[in-house]
Length: 412
Image (tube, rainbow, N blue to C red; front, side):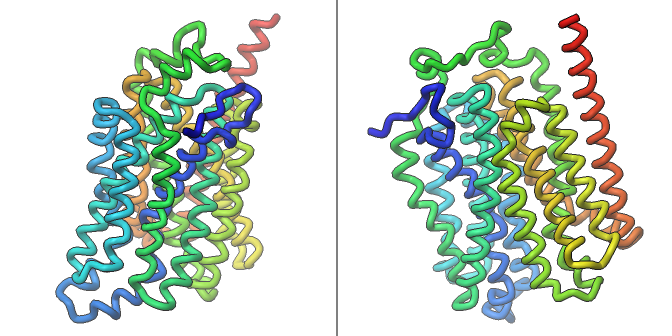
């Protein structure tokens, strides 16, 4: 049996449990967008069927809708029946429902399988969030939350590239990519164990308890703080989703080949975010949560501010890169803070609430951005978003400044 490495000297990425949780993280980005390159081919294949146009356009966001509804229940089940069974069951369901579009005969059945895929994603995300809190503390937890964002970004780049190649041969073939998750199962089965927090407390040489007990018992007002985090995460994902949903139309309005430039822009965003997230743990160690929020939202504000300034390829790519870096630095904070303030017995629920916020933000983004673009144009919408993000960054920077002042006052 593979034994997890828990010595203080070993980096977290050498821990088998961390590797398994990063594998799980790649499935989140695979869930929605992997079939995007196949949509045009599917439309031709099902041409003439009732409601075909609508159902095909709903295939991509369909899992998000189910995640929003099911994630809180999944979080409750994770806390009630255990993390391991929910994670492994979720991955199994992911393989079956994700690949179903390859062999199911009718469009209605494919759409139903996409809804079921959302249930699998909710099970995976809530259980893996709880397991991060159970397995790791301190710097290792921060490092892993950053590495998960890197895994999502790099995984998304690989999966979307594969989907594009497969879609050239057949619009059904990209669904096979979901079946690759079956390769994760044997490793996860070996390294993911139940009741890990008890094992770590007894056997690890790493300190897992704080003097105030916050790692174990959580914050007294944790429900209110989780709700506040969820609102901020919902807004953050709603804004970030302007990139994949509106960037193609923005580029088209500038006269660019939207397909080529969108691929380049989103590719640059993903790669930049993946690289930035590798440094999240070091940045958070120096700047704390508040300072990292300030840096992350500051980069996002910069990216949205420069996007509409000049219709130049390099400026547009620079804006995409800045948004990718900022998002990759801000997002790990949500998981880190949630795991720190929530009781160990309720980490599944905390993960479920944040998961709902992520996908609800993605789902609602077009419904708010389209009216804004209609009224104020791309320039006004992007500049307004930049102002909002800059304001959040300023408040976070002030919070960090107050922390530094308080520490110096105690020293004096």
